Amino acid sequence: MNDAQLLQFSRHIMLPDFDVAGQERLLQSKVLLIGAGGLGSPIALYLGAAGVGELTIVDDDQVDSSNLQRQIAHGHADIGRSKAASAAESVLALNPSTVCHTINRRLDAEALGSQIAAVDLVIDATDNAETRFLLNRICWQQRTPLVSGAAVRWEGHISIFDANRHDSPCYQCLYPDTELDDQLNCAENGVISPLVGVIGSMQALEAIKCLTGIGESLVGTVLFFDAKFAEWRRIGLSKKPGCPICANPSEVT
Image (cartoon, rainbow, N blue to C red; front, side, top):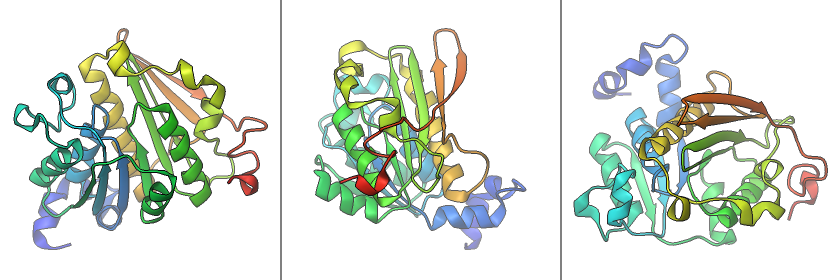
């Protein structure tokens, strides 16, 4: 780190268990963020501000006026722009040294696989069940940690799935394929605006912990938040017997 970076990240470096070594690991890290909306906005901003070295933001949508209620990476002047580009611009305004890549189209399995192979960690900030299952499968195949979060109405949750941990379940242990139609999204059900900030910020925090190896991750745990009553609940999650993704990883295709 140069002198400017030592000053910029001084509040991290002051932490005894973080120090210069932790910041160096962040500066060298590469993260793939899928989604630049309600969850993706705080994730992108906090990872950029924290000093993540390289951030690839994927979103095939454009900013709409209805997004501004909660998607804090975008402003009124960004309406009609690519969400990925708008979010990257906001990240660079905080930290110009972060290398930002933007992809403003939906990626198929092959393209996602190539992107995931190039990073240290993937963050799921989508509200699309099909994409979530695809991300889970590819991350498990490539042994890339996946930070997953969701928020709708007044409730949200977060967890981490990591094939490098023998005790880690995967996303499909939490939501089997048969529950695809039961998952809710904000467009159809609404969401209270600060909730996505709470869950997205927690995803950014868990990503930083995972990238630096500091603290205890949420692998094997789902953290639920009820915003209406300000209640957090921790629920253990184990591998689901017969899970097609993680029960027999050698058979995943």
